[in-house]
Amino acid sequence: METPRPDSASHAMHALLVHWFVRYNPLFQASALCVLGGVLMLSRGMGPDADVGLTLVLELYQWLLIGAAGLLYRRWLKRRPAVFLGIIQAVYMGDPTLQLASLASSGERVVAVLWVILFAAKLRALSWAFRLNLSAGVYAVAVGGAGLAAVLPQLRVLGTAPGTLCAPVIAWCVLGLGLLALRFPPRMHSRDPAVGTDNAMFVRVSRAVWWIWAAAGAFQVWNSVLAVGLDTLAPAVCAAILITVRSADDEARIWTRVAMALAFACIYSNAEGSVLGMTAVVLLLSSSNRPPRVLVASVLAGFAALKLDGGLAAGQLAVAGLVCASVLLLLLWRRRAWSAVPPLVLFTVHAAWSLGLVRGPAGGLEWGVTLLAVGFLMLVAGVFLSSRISLPEVDAEPNPMAAPTTSAAAVAR
Image 1 (cartoon, rainbow, N blue to C red):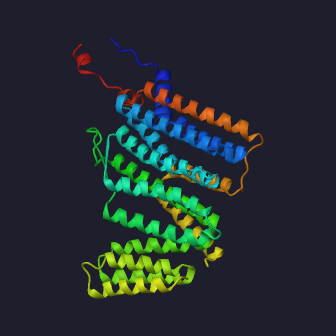
Image 2 (image 1 turned 135 degrees about the vertical axis):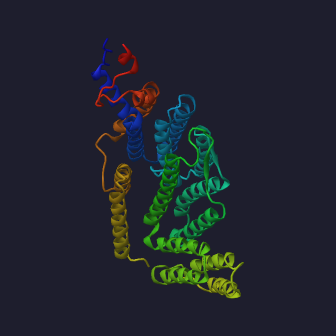
Image 3 (image 1 turned 60 degrees about the vertical axis):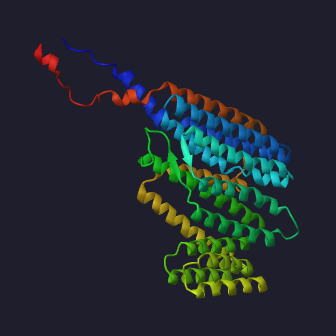
């Protein structure tokens, strides 16, 4: 007796739903984009009066993301869609809408402090949702970066010459975060027995989160640089070079990297004093197991920093940016990392929007409210579909294109 074949049309439809709403759920990404666009439109349409309200809306959306991810991961065991939500949450924790800058312009310093506190709380909630053990370095570096992102906009609205204050603060904070990461390496470990720390997907997702937060930090610094002046970027670049001195494995590399940082400071920076101070700190930390000349150089650099206080050409910076963008696109093409293209496009559109190069449609308030509502509804719909559509069922079904086989029972009959 011939076994009836499953309905191929329903099977194909089910496989299509699984492909688009479980493996690559577009509703989550569309929800994040709608909320992002809605906040930007309302911010431009309502001005400073909406800064606190929009910050609360974004916080509510992020806590919904964390709650939905925890529900999918811990209760319904839908790990793939939960990871999508976790990555979106990592993007939103980097303040892509520049709410911190808006709060600084409105004088809402208390709300900015609360934002940093909530950042730490959301980091702890994410570790609970995904059953993670986070090292002290994760909290130190991530929360420290969040504090830097909150402080920089506040510095821009202080004093008559914020560039003279903002540039050294950026450089010293970059140096501090880098040295902190070297001293307490950020590590994530999964407590889920079905995943494990050595799981390839877990490793890639962990790296993606850190790359997202590194890009978010660079975006915040770049926004401050554009607001204050391009000459504030050079000390931060020198700080990044000096961070590598701490991890140098021989003395020749120490002097080479210190020389690179000092040469860059002399050519592009007007804050040689800050760069020399950072050089003194790095050499002092590196002098414990080195010859005495390293300690002597640290003292001399510190003495020179007390005596000195030092422009960045826009054309040279544009050329450097073009070269970096070309290298990034080449790497994406070589690695076939097409999933990184939509975030890059989103970042480009958002940067153009922030600079006023792209304008929203007329009636921005109505569009903003609509996009916010659609974004929240798409999040709920995505969670509902991910919980209802089962991925293992489709994976366990036989391939309809495979050749039919005859069972042992049929042969016996």
